[in-house]
Length: 206
Image 1 (spheres, helix red, strand yellow):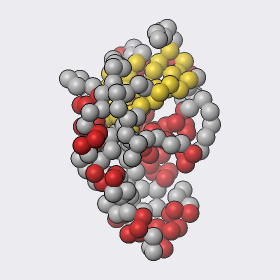
Image 2 (cartoon, one colour; image 1 turned 90 degrees about the vertical axis):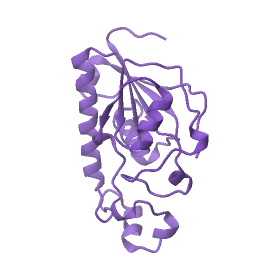
Image 3 (cartoon, helix red, strand yellow; image 1 turned 180 degrees about the vertical axis):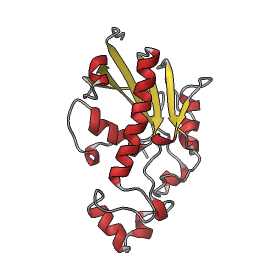
Image 4 (cartoon, one colour; image 1 turned 120 degrees about the vertical axis):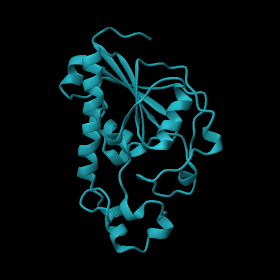
């Protein structure tokens, strides 16, 4: 399917399933290698420009999906910083009063030494701004972004055609979704006109 020059495609990919994801631990700015079943991820979709979180699990995923390509690594595209809770699971944290408060109201509570939701949102939007600046300066029509579940959900909540809250979006590991924008609408920070799943040879459901 081809698009006219007034359309821009930005594909958002969540990294493949990691060993720590299998343990259901909060990874955040920690890192973990992809598990074996994630290492045969592939797609026939191609793009003109590639961006990735600078964390290893995203770089590893990018190399699987788009081998031999160069990636612009952006720290702004990292997952939320879960502070002292990184590497821990719900079972390990469920008796912590601060954790319970955060679960009940994650907008107004924050992991110890971690990010608030507004801080996370501002950082992700800063990364998005860098992506769109590159699109406009280079005249790009199709680009890919390899990042994290929280980042993808935030960008979908912000830019998907259908307005849904952050918490309502479900984004599986090792999947991709294309946001198709009118170029002028993207420049104005408006929502895209269409979402489309990216075909992958194997998808992770962990």
